[in-house]
Length: 121
Image (cartoon, rainbow, N blue to C red; front, side, top):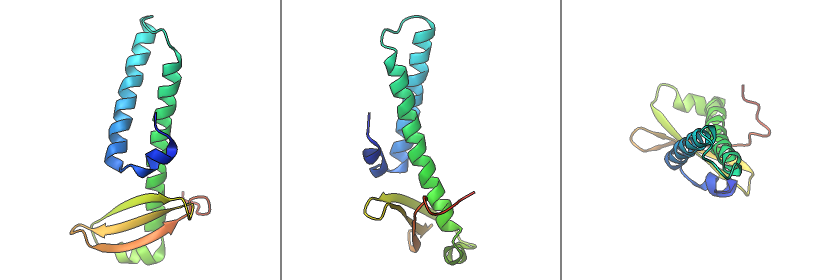
């Protein structure tokens, strides 16, 4: 079970894989519970919390990218281009740093997004 700090340091692919594994583990635990083969019921709760942590980290990264892409200056740079974005949490600023890059890997723009101050619908 990883802490939220450790999860924020991982890349999206690793988080998606961990989420898939945790959901599969939860399915197996629930199946064992339904067939009365489980002895430690706390594993279900812990696995559910792990799934929630992983989903939260991924969701906040997506929201940070959406907020950064909707900024007028960045939206102008990204308009009409194929781009990718990577968001990572910076603990010193208590905000997400979002890097936008083109399909060739060139840096297009960057932004710092504090989701506590930015309201994204």
